[in-house]
Length: 258
Image (cartoon, rainbow, N blue to C red):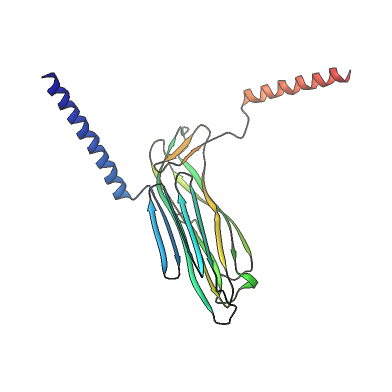
């Protein structure tokens, strides 16, 4: 009798666990997050990858190469696109090269102070777009960054010999402790060569996601992102100890000089 009761309880527990797992998988499937996406294309060849945590794709061909990576746990996006026309012959056309990376995830903040109901997120991007010799009207590189409504940056058809890029996009989210909110971001590189020019768009240095958090708070995502707030201003007790240390140091120096 006792054995049957234990077996019954075990079956109920298994049923509940399976039910919760199915609910979780259904929620992920319906909402589509956490999700990362990496897409690369060189001419007519392409690779398309998705994963809840990290997606990475690389494609190399004779006339170009492409790389893309989205890592949700690190909050980073990376893209690179390079095209080569090989021969400096007028009218000799290269291939179109594209690379794109994106993330889409639910974030939760803990320890939010009373009266604070919003935080600011930043996506910092550094890289270069390059067309050797100034390029031509048909040889160009470019990029496209999207961090939500009103936060986007793009250059299409760059023909500059060397153009460093350093961009920070910001987005404000209204939040409350333990209630999830959605964050999305994407980065794209592309290049097209002509007449022997070999342009590239290099953002493999990475785009980095970060939050301006109030002291004492932490933020996490379903995809594994984690950031904790740290105060840059010493607390009163720390200032007192620092002052005592400086006074003691001054006294020591005085005795040594005597």
